[in-house]
Amino acid sequence: MLLSTLVAAPAWLAAYQHHELLLGRGLSVLGVWALLNLAVSGYHLPRTDRRESAHHFHLMNCAWAFVNAVLAAVGILRTHPGRPPVGFGPSGALADMHLTGQIFLFNAILDIGYLMVALWLLNRATYPSARRPERLYGYGRSVQLQGAFLLIFDVAMWWILGR
Image (cartoon, rainbow, N blue to C red):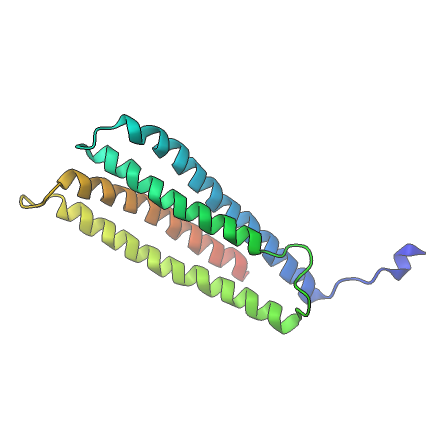
């Protein structure tokens, strides 16, 4: 008797809930990456000499990790894997899913910019006239690592959510 009173969720709601579930899981991957960076670089940072590139590498990784952790936490808290907000309908769900995909695509373009900045920093570190080449090299390696991870992450999220 109870089963006959249950109404199946509309297809748009099921698709939206699936989208939000995938988004939450993806942002959890970003959060784990951030925590891993905080743990590893946070451990190594006080154990490195400020005159070496490793110190600047770990310092920059900690900064990236903090930003990534905040973005992951805020994103996870904003997902609606259960019930959507009151007054939310099919057009709102479609617009929200489309916007999320566009954000990840835009971020992927920014990530390419990060990789270009990393190459510039690494190249600049080789100049004989460069001030503090160890800092430029450490920052460049960190931006290279973080940009590469974020490019893979953003493209994967754009592809997964767009399916």
